[in-house]
Image 1 (tube, rainbow over the protein chains, first blue to last red):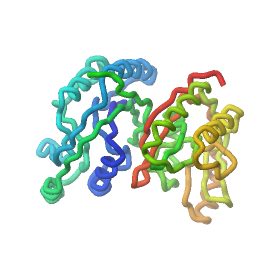
Image 2: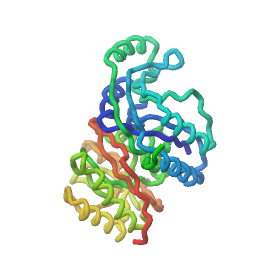
Image 3: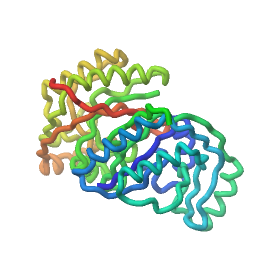
Image 4: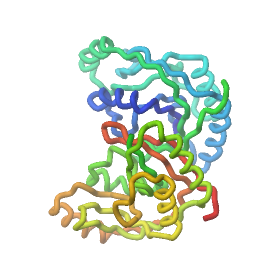
Length: 171
Length: 171
């Protein structure tokens, strides 16, 4: 069973991301807009409750995530993914690191660059057409996200929420 | 903001429902397979925490939902919706009624017929072609669902989970 830990931004920010995703993101129909905190990892279904307990303990330590979507960036040339860049804070880095440390399954494949994907699976030409426009439109939204979600993937690639965890701590 | 209360069946049952939904359900990409416990209702965003508290109290009273998907039925001629019929139990009826009573917004539009939709927005001809086949294939799955979800709808019609509630009681 494939799991991941994500934070869903406000409805307002999800709606905004979807105006782009609808046209440019091949995963648009698989999940609503999200910030990945721990990338997808594979576990046996029997482990999910244990993992859920670990996430709950972590969520109890951290307060609401302070998010600043500050600009539209691209992972080009690594991939043709275009995204709302979320400014990396100590808080985001810490909760990310702690999730990887406590759920000791699947190491980070990349440096943590928090983001909301708005375009993917573009051809190089599409990317070069679209990215300059989007970068110019830009984004500047600040908000607090007071919960994180453990999600699991179905066979068709879509994701269902297993559990939500309120961020009720001080860190 | 449009809210609804649903129960997601096991991954296995969701995967099975999706094999049909992929072809026949116009809402396939908007949400993973679900059982509606309280139909969509409109509230101001400021009310969501209050509603969430009410659902939490109810979830604390009920135990895991005993589900039996017993056959494939249709709401024809009322609508052309085809679904996995979930046998109505006292437990399901009670939690449904209590949700409507406590969250006093939006009355039931229909008698409560618990189900997982697998086809909708079919033409009459499509319905008449497909339904006899599906009815013959049928379904017979029993399981327990140990949590319910409060979900909200985005502008594009897709749904995000706001919170999950474990069914930790005895009823």
